[in-house]
Image (cartoon, rainbow, N blue to C red; front, side, top):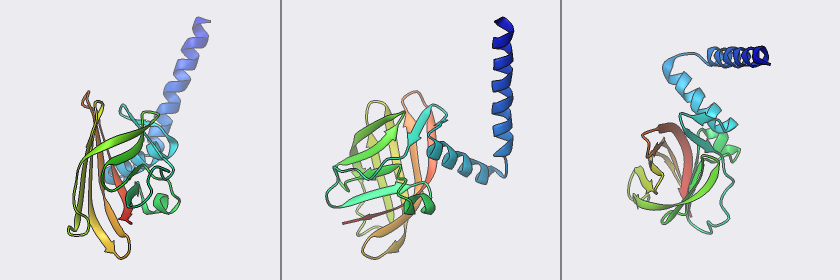
Length: 163
């Protein structure tokens, strides 16, 4: 029994190393792929688990919603959505959360989007730059999540805000 546990542990160690080797590349591409893989597969990045959510039924009118890439956005794999004013929705650490927005920039006036969200466990920052403005405003930027224990997760985002 003791040998079986040792053998199983060695197998897990080798499997983890092999996965790490297959995702290596340049530093910026590697971190982008890691963020995409962790969100798409629902794996932890550090100690923060970020998952995809369907568009929230609670949002009835104006909204902002983001995915980690244009492809994920087009396939409706969102990691963030808000009602453009009061509440943001995310899947963090396996729980769907409704979080209160603390501040948000005026998207009609500004070329830059900023949002700050905070609760007892997380501090979330959304920063983006308008890349297209028609009926809905398209943005690219970053989403940063910081846990109270100091763990930080940052990912690129792509999405839109509109009514």
